Image (cartoon, rainbow, N blue to C red; front, side, top):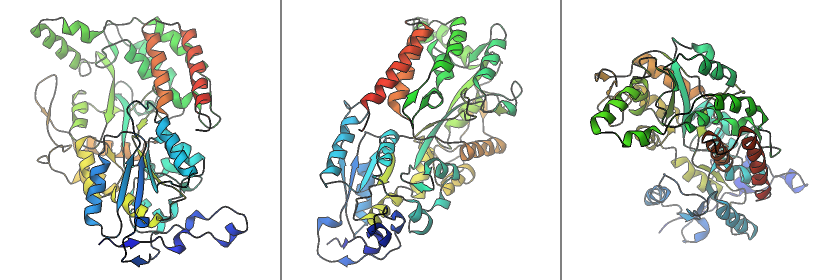
Length: 462
């Protein structure tokens, strides 16, 4: 019979200050507090989770594994995700209805934008105290930039256990470290100065890709998420410049019409352009410390690289992709149990597998260290697994300094997990329409301002 662990009174009671009208001291949530045990089975001890959006992570499997080894309480998942619910708005509304009717879950698994809405409403528990003093995962166990990314005025209301970095790099011989996180003007100047027969982007298949590269971070740069306003006018000169550059025919369609030998030769020429200095910028997705990163490095032919990132005006050229975040609702009466389950999501073995599989960069320092320095080439997915150089066909094995650069980059990059996919999609759609000459630069700016403002109007007080 499963035991029931009731939440400790010391973990959830309000302070005397709160009884005098001040806000509850959330810092009293401490997983070290003892919890009384009852032998009589009762669902009141269960930890209930609501998932708002579909995920690449199989949370059902993780929960089943946890329940199989835990005799104190059971974790129950309610999946509110629906593929037709484009921005998880209906799932979010259902959760808010649950909270209003006093049938709220204990844990919420949600995309960053929905987690931020819960945080802004004051519905989430501050996890900073338990991360400092409680049982389970600790602040010091996690990458410092991950902790920084979720800390709001000293409080931590949500966590994530993996992330993906989208960035870009050039040969250091062409642009040195002073161009790290380059700004739009530096990128425009570099584009303007490339010799004839040289392309700005490596492996560029459509004209739209250049627009996507230059505007990747403008959801951060042109949108004020606090005041829910936007101003895309800084893009005017950039759009005018990009429209002045010749477009390219969709190369995937062109290659599809070639004979096999011709298509193979065409692809080989494209793959060798970076090594041969016929392309400048290589877009890189870092989804772990695994066999995929050396493939990106091999395209440079062993040359040193500078992480220029995406053009930006904030000094941060990294796009952070966080699929799901986890938080404990302040209304939960089983916070210690909820925290016990959340901590299990940061298990080192699971984190290492996440990094090897390409599911994401683990947030656990020990997992990053193990992947980078204590995983040999015989391990499936290891960063030391040889790959093939596109120019010579020879094996390429990543070097120690290249691994060091990767670890330093992912450990120090400024992470911004609170992205809003709705706004990102609006920017992508309008910029693609501009790239395809369906609209003018001025029309694109007008559409962006109008659509983002309308988006915020429709998402007020969700």
